[in-house]
Amino acid sequence: MIQRPKSLSRQQAPTLGAAVATPAIALPGWLRRAVPDTQSLGSQRLEDIAIAAGAALSALDAVVRRQERWAGAWRQRLALNAAAVTARQVGRVEDEAALRDAVLLTRPGDDVGPAGRMLLGWRRLAAPHTEDLLTRPALGAALAEFGHAPDDEALGNLTNELRGLAAGGVVDMVVGAFIAAEGQRFGRAFGAWLADALVAQRLGWLRAVPLLGVEVNARGSGRSRRADLPIATTGIEVGAEQAKSLLAAHARAALRAVDLSAELGRKADRLLTVAPRLRAKAADIVIEKLLSDDAIVASEKIAGMSDRGLRRLFDRLVELGAVRELSGRPTFRIYGL
Image 1 (cartoon, rainbow, N blue to C red):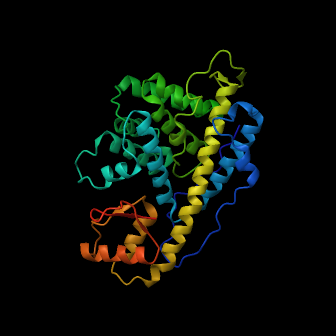
Image 2: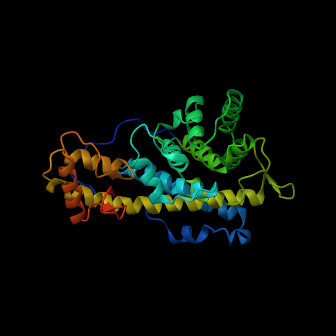
Image 3: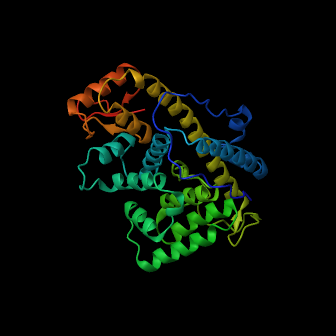
């Protein structure tokens, strides 16, 4: 069983300054080869998949514990990825661009729509301290964003189940999160959300990392079949095939997150390198927002900067290769790493 490491400090990230490039986490070739996809899963041994999953989560843990300046943008980009997959899983048609538009282009106070609320739910996972994620108020708010309206009894039952799962092994904890969500008819997407929150708490992360949403359609998120060979758990019967599926899904998601961290790290280094060349007033505020979120709109209200000044700053950043325009539109433009 993975032991709970010392929690990360709540200390704030360092202030903006000169860019200091941190080498990306190097993933060994054997690890990429050892993580099976859904087609090759059946030919792999549970022990081998468990080793690969542990190594993948260890690499991800190293990324998390660096507390990079761009970690906010990284988590929120992963939240967008998860929202796009889970939205399709429940029959929505919105892709990542449409989800981003729904949240960023809707006026404050207006409804962002069902798919937009799902993105807000995944963004919620990545924002607060992990200790606050599985409280009754936080769960109620997240469930509402996933389209559910639980009564007090259902919410209390879920809270109690999660409290019990937190003391178990990692595999049955993740399986139990799916079972708890589906048992209350909250769906597999919310089961993935719960599993990510539980894993973040177990590993002592300051903030959760959206992982399993992109793997929500992987096999093994329901109750185990009696024909499966059970493995040791704390109260939940987890079949060997189910355990293989969940471990492989976690490994794939972890490697995907590490790869994205390397990509965004390079882009953030470029942004911080050009930052001293920016003369616009409040440019440091814009840079901080770009490092801490998936994207911002060109009409964002920035203290001390006019709309025209902000558009000119974004044009300059695109010219310098420090940010991208993400919408592809001539108007209502959106920028990010």
